[in-house]
Length: 239
Image (cartoon, rainbow, N blue to C red; front, side, top):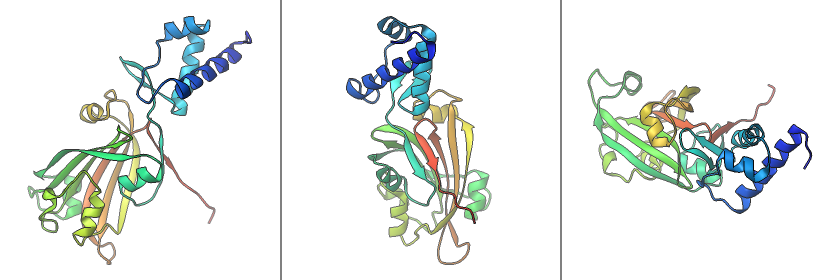
């Protein structure tokens, strides 16, 4: 091994990559920095630099107060209108869902405004944790109009909500969506298995059904994605 600091760091990174690929599984803990320092005969700074590179590459994940773990994989998605299940399968992951809330409640103002509800009027609230290969990727909260979907809460909400809407005669035909960087709330952090304040991607979506423009509002949703497990890609062309 070369004695130059940069080459040591590259060598350690390759050793860790091989370890992750051949001996460890997603979710397994990496040895502590002191143990790696002794195992590879390098400085703590060299070990930390190698680990940081692998965290940035998505191969490892740091969990504050717990250690460094092998990543479950980074989901790369193009910006398009699709259900979570379709998105995950297209990226090569097996999706699953855990329902947190499925009830009637008074929605927040943005949701009530989109759905055209009077102040204090209830809507259906569906909150779910979405997983890829068993690892939490996002927390989704959807608000929907009971008037159009009276039997929604009796459906199996662990599957595709968009499929349920389509079967009910109200398919999502277009949507307006924004995405921004945010810090995880305590509630979202607990569900996503990250620290409060950790960086996340926050999506807000206003969905419509029907042939008219803009159509009939059918859903208002917010989705909080782990930024270390979800990446957006897009193709840009000069017009």
